[in-house]
Length: 190
Image 1 (cartoon, one colour):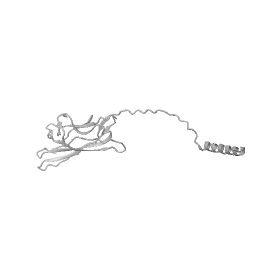
Image 2 (cartoon, helix red, strand yellow):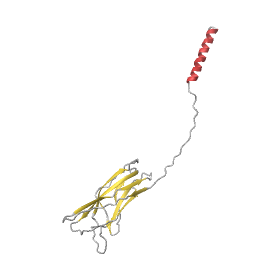
Image 3 (spheres, rainbow, N blue to C red):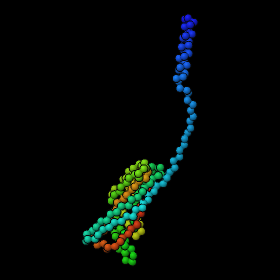
Image 4 (cartoon, helix red, strand yellow):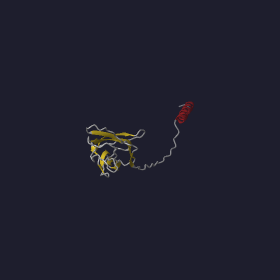
């Protein structure tokens, strides 16, 4: 090879290397950090602002009154343990000196609607309770019974849960204003 040609070849090779160096990205400098996030458990709760009522008109035949009691059920435990809702009540009575009452078996929970509260991300509950469910009643509230549940790993989030209740009013019932205290509770576990 002639010396001029070698110089030309070396100059071309140097130019190619310089162009490759310009085109190649610079080595990135990086740092890493481990991020730790703590998610604290909240609570399981039920609340209501409902003021349920029903009305029937006596006409010589047995009647059925119905009402609903919308509640907000929140499972913020982060446990996936599931939960259940219970119900009990006092007997419907007119109160006063000579009270009239409805039967302690007058009320029956006929069904429940349940939906995720808007704007929240929920895991819908898997309910295994069948209906109707007799609502216990007495002069003081008897032991509560389950009326809705969320199987394990379901029911996380906040829900509007609305039970529907039917009340039997026999034809021989005395007219008047009857009251009952309904007690609803949320309990951990399905």
